[in-house]
Length: 192
Image (cartoon, rainbow, N blue to C red; front, side, top):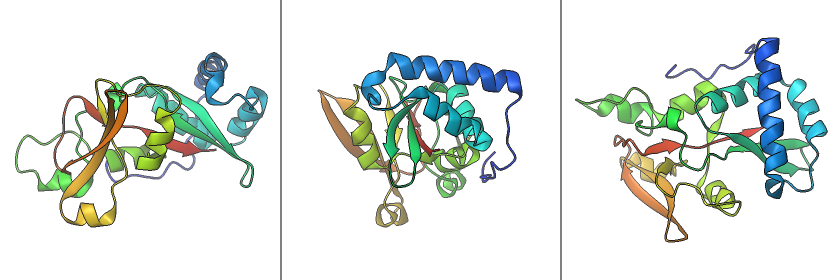
């Protein structure tokens, strides 16, 4: 999957599509505080018109990201989904930041990297600002951490940044981009 970002023509079989829509609707209804002014019928219509985006949401769901609607842009008409799992998604942990970092490791290489995994799923890593927006909706990453998009000047020097929440505060940290930990993954963002 590394290096792949072609999600066009990715469509779920009818049964998987229907099951995913049920899961997403139940999560939407249970967490109305994340999107109190939005209606599920409109979200579902948008998803059904964009099967490749529904496929990406399926990828987010199967890696335990628990995607949910966190916003709507009236200008573009797009809904924004973030991974809203309490901790960094289990199916995306123990990965370094990007392919360059992965290839630079001489030994004990992780199986994948955050940037390529996200691209393969058709999503983007949250930015630091998006991560802070997410934290206004609840308490996330109390035991884990999540890679976020890293500014070029930091990445060029070999680093990458990640965030978590401790002591009721969101922290931004740095690490070598080639580092990986069992408790660090990434959270994705998808516009539909």
